[in-house]
Length: 233
Image 1 (tube, rainbow, N blue to C red):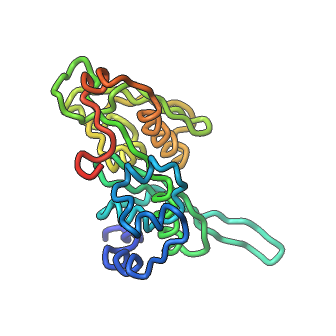
Image 2: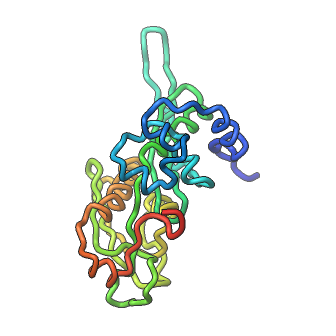
Image 3: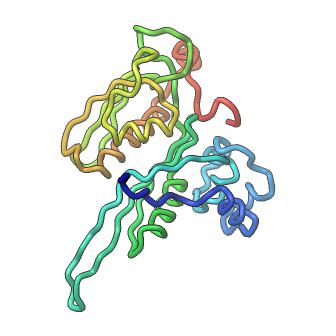
């Protein structure tokens, strides 16, 4: 008998229904609703806080989500045993945007939806390129330079890899990189890597570092760097 299917996030119909009833409460949300901000890249560059998941639903339609971890947390109280669920989720469009979120709750389904919304609020733009000296294919399939991400005791280093290498990282980091649109990479990790949430956060932090590194226009052209989606920047 196959294992029971893990609950997933909202369907496309549910997202459309939510957007039809959406009344923005933040400055960025109002700009998106009015059509003054039309891309995710432009939204991030405004410097305004991203506090409504609907903004991501509008600017990045068709986002995919993945539940990385469902963990049951038990605690004894005066009234008895208290059970809650901790959910870790990742979202991405497989083309330069990825987000990581966590939520806790009494029920799995609502907690998953909250974790997915939190992941959308943590969306980042990922730089991709062809940084391996062994490759030179001219496509943006890997990370442009070596980057390192940290979360608690876990440290993950991502290195540019030739085309066709695949994702040579842990299963948790692979889920984050896949939804970010990274196709080939070499990875090295250390620390308590069995801790799922720290492993995912370290991979997410490493991808965040790709955009934090300052580069000249010449370096971007040489490494074939793209930021965010190829279409719909």
